[in-house]
Image (cartoon, rainbow, N blue to C red; front, side):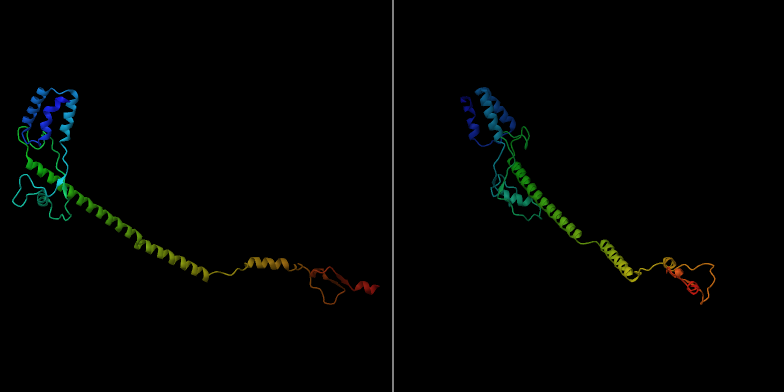
Length: 237
């Protein structure tokens, strides 16, 4: 690990703003001079990657270069970029954009690092995040309002359903009334009455001449009585 002693000044010094070509040539010459081992190379690579992340800083921190006479802090820069309709409270911290020790994203390969552009990118990133949150909240409110409105409409019966139910009730009531008024009494049909009368009454003799009132013999079997009264036999006796 002794071979990493040549790289200690790079850790103690702040991040440079020199052009990337100069930093890469410096690292190349330093590596050729120190000749680090494999483990030291892994350690140095890890340290290089870890420099890309920046911890949040206060929103009231001053800018490296003021954007205007009245824009000297991150808060003022954020307020100037937000839309006029934004009314939410501002956060107290801002997350800077990722920036490595040798950064190639914000400037050219031969250009020095632009700190003012890096700060502006950080402010724009926070501005987009805040406005996106506002749009999401508004969309959620609209969805909740639509759901509540649909529930209210579904709870109230529609005019067509109400009219159908009313017509069904009226038809059922009229059917009951007509049934109560026109319910006939049970009666035997005429054919059945005639048949009953013919069966119960004794059948008259067909072709029998009328008999005199005073006669010798009276046959009561025609009237359902098994008796024959004969006055002639008693006289002969």
